[in-house]
Image (tube, rainbow, N blue to C red; front, side, top):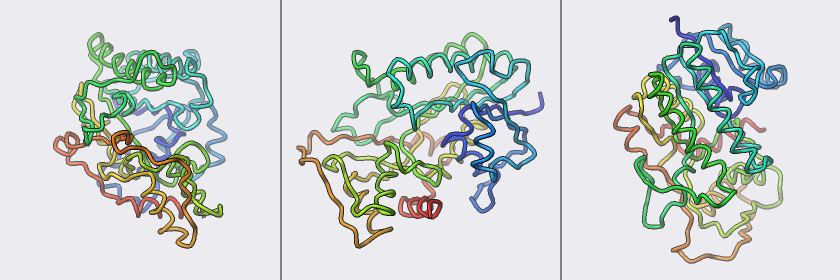
Length: 324
């Protein structure tokens, strides 16, 4: 089969990252460029093309209007050699009810796996989430892929993470039943020009405050520990896993450079608006209660030679430049 790629979620943060990496000059492609036809599944292709014409002009890109939850709207009858399934409303997902979030991920994954099999695809990359591990223990510095933790089943707020766990299991089932090569990318937190600054991402909110508010505001006590991978690194890692990831394997995708939320707010301030104050609103918590969300990435380093190429301070400046 002639290589042909379907990307779901191609007009979201992950999709924009992948397209910029491939088609926008000066983003250090690191020899991962492909020349296959790429079909982007989108609920509103016209709106995306109007908003991002620079990502839509390459002759290898085409759009198919459809929704992962609407089976009849999918590109049945077309052939794809590879499918990259990244369609999840992580940006605006909190506007959905927990049940709606679960159904979107669960039903959408089944539909796209069925489409992959029907289209003759041989490889399938799922973008999952580090949330599938559940709360990270205070004595675990970084979560490895074989960590057995999971989010609490009885809490509706964990619907996103529960659904991602099921989506991973569905990939294993389809791999067993149909011989479909499946690779899982467990994604953590990211930063880049396409990250919205006005939703629920702390780093985006801090950049927004640094650019347009009187002060940078931290809603909590600033103690949670996070890592942030630049979207260029994200794209490079996802392209690598799509093409070279080992069948049946799961990989953490994220930075291993740890920073607290308070430190992050001050870093953003120092880089963008040194004269502005940082206001930390929450009362200090005991060190033992510190929340961590940190991936262990030795596996992807060892198996594919991937690492963090764009430091956090540069990633922040790149993001700011895109919003000026």
